[in-house]
Length: 147
Image 1: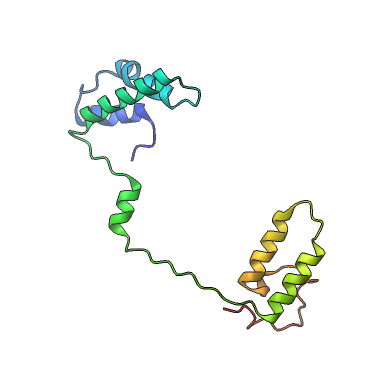
Image 2: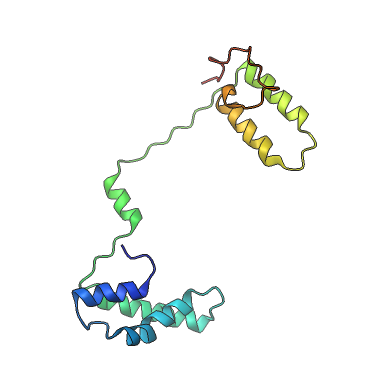
């Protein structure tokens, strides 16, 4: 696989079809620089159009001897159809109580991310919570996820 490196692409193309893209300096001047300039976030409209034109030209030359496969196409052909099921599970009484306790203690939190992480863990299963103060060690949580 070639990972956005046109010089490497030139070497591979030159290996399979010597001279088809010219020498490396010519390739860089004609193809690599305009394509790289077009991919720059500050590229002008002209640079983008020129980069697209040069890219199409390069693609038409190399398509005769290189197969271009995109990862999404390969994955579609190799993986079975994906099915998604959305299930709603009611929280248990323990989860509801812990949820209320967590949200009441954290009413004035400046950084909500840790609270959201704790709530996500709680909704998955109360045993995932690390805090001893919230989740009593004496409480049996083996069957308290609502799932």
